[in-house]
Length: 337
Image 1 (cartoon, helix red, strand yellow):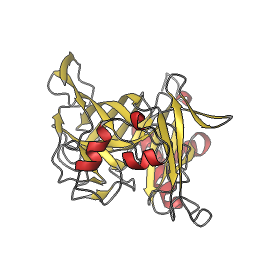
Image 2 (cartoon, rainbow, N blue to C red):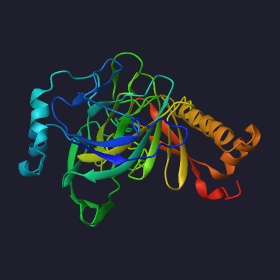
Image 3 (cartoon, one colour):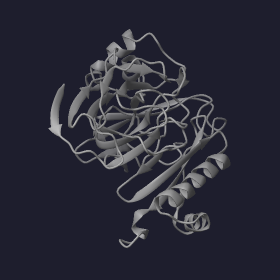
Image 4 (tube, one colour):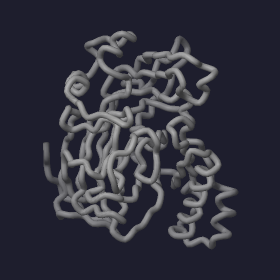
């Protein structure tokens, strides 16, 4: 599906053509990548900077048979699920089923891709939370697996975890990323390509900035979450089906090493490593770099401001590379500055 709308170019960005377009990308056996990001993938859709794409994505709750065996009603499972499980043969090395890749025609290695998360919709009335043998942050404490189905009330935006326990829903995509320069990489560990960020701040109304490594950027999204706690300690969130609307803008005169993000209230830097201290170091250094580049602070003042105003948060602890994100409140900057 495609329709046109008038669009003005953003400052410091490439918007081509002058009339932007809107697309819809459903989840089908032909439009998903099972378990990998790859710079060698063929795009399933090519758009231009400034265009908008609505992308449909599966949950990580497993096959229809597995969901039904654990108490999900067959009629509640989105109908496109079965065909993807039955027909997709190329899988791995990871386990996430991601929609895409979407190529942005103007994107080249060295650019920055701005991903505006315009809307995130819940596509099912249930979520699952699952841990397995040897997974999660406490694998020896829980040497077995468990699968829990959590009903979702999409009108009240709450998840009924258990009697007397209601989880506020803030849906977001656990995985949003671009391709590496080379071949396939696992969808599980987040890194410079973004990917499996599992950052609960990236809800509708926020923006993600990702350094581009492959021609076209090759954006993919999936791993839908209805809600999640920082840490994601048992290895899953409230996993569910989502549709997201993204606007893509290519920046030619910006350079990033790590992904960054922006919410209505905060600037966010990120770091990823197998070591939590190293991930924290990377996130903090990138926040200092942001303050020097964008807010024109001295190196010393940027370090000091990070100590008195920035919150260092553990994003997740369970995806191979752990994640840390630094959150800088916008309200501390006056209009004068």
